[in-house]
Amino acid sequence: MADDLPALGFGLPVSGTWATPGAMIHVARLAEELGYHSLWTFQRVLQPVADATPAYAAVHDAVLPLAHVASHTSRIGLGTATLCAPFTPPALLAKAMATLDHLASGRLTVGVGMGWLPEEHEAAGVPYAGRGARFEEYLRCLVALWTQDPVAFHGEHYTVPRSHLGVRPVQRPHPPLLVGGAAPAALRRAGRLAQGWIAGTRQDLDSLADSVALVHEGARDAGRDPAAVRILLRAVVDLADADPGPGRRPFHGTREQVLDDLAAVRRRGAGEVFVDLNFSPRVGSPDVDADAAVAEAEHVLHALAPARWGS
Image 1 (cartoon, rainbow, N blue to C red):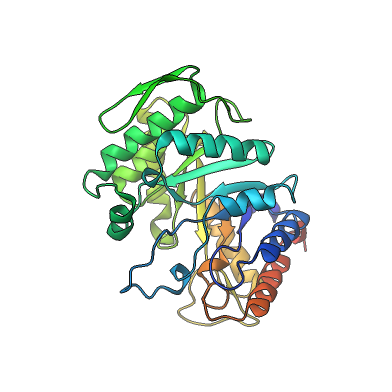
Image 2 (cartoon, helix red, strand yellow):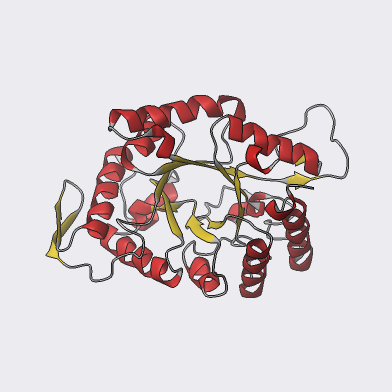
């Protein structure tokens, strides 16, 4: 069975009442013990007053929790899925991620996006218009900061005077860089400029293979090997004791059904999936009992544990 399934990661507690310092360490250690591939966070800087999405009501920073659990784990990968990169100047993000790669002993994956919420752009002082071109330049600047010493970058939106970053990432030439997004231009961008693509919670699984094909097209256009491009999918899992019946949604159902769903997305091109309970109403909502949320996470972690895939 293991050969049919994607590498499986888990979302670190960052949203809602379960996102406590102790729960972060507990989930990280348990996931590593059970053979999970990686741990992931996401960024939500603000929640507009008109937005009632429970998962966005109380979201911690995306980077600091990874630093928090880095010293309590030793093998499991750590990643962001995703950071809204343009909210942070490239030089500051490059230094922070290089430092985190050291704290994690080279286990970091940097997942970034250009952001989609106008209110966050306004609060960050970043224009919403022209996001695509600005983001592409940002990616090139970020890679230059990691790989050139001394570095100098002069673009339309970002400038780095000839200087030394000082701290280089453990991973060379730099930590894997994954890009989120759903539009065709974003998919091709991931293939051209990054080491992989992050599919979000709204990804239509029936069209996943078509999206992956566009990522691969971008890689080929850039003279890169499509087979080397990582495809990561976020899955909101809801385990049930019995078959929910007609109308069952992907990743909702019995353990066997969820494992079948994981195998299906692997066949459609997603080599990596992470279970993100921050988006589950039973876990990540701000009014859920914290102990009950952690208990649900433990249940899912054990049920889907890669160490049990042969059983």
